[in-house]
Image (cartoon, rainbow, N blue to C red; front, side):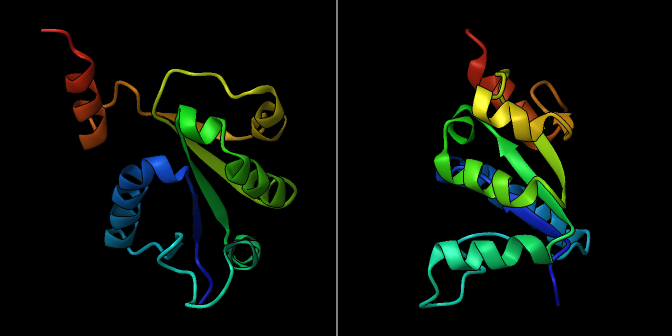
Length: 129
């Protein structure tokens, strides 16, 4: 069965993407996330290129590392013309110029100061005591 959601993220932020994936699964949402959903022996580019058109929505976990990721940029390119992109903004940064083009029509969820588990952890780690 095709996934409802394709999760896009920088590998540096995999724990956050995994948390989002767990919450989606708990809600009954079918999702696709690398590397878990890549068939053994299948190349990453092939698997990702196949998964994006099968998904209804892309969720972009937006950090500085995803902002500068060439792979995330490629995923946005594949998604831009026919998918809804929902971006979880985890850090207070603006998309780099090449990504602004593709993110101009996206829905943004700002979780920088949110009461979510990750937002609370982020606030604690940035507080100076």
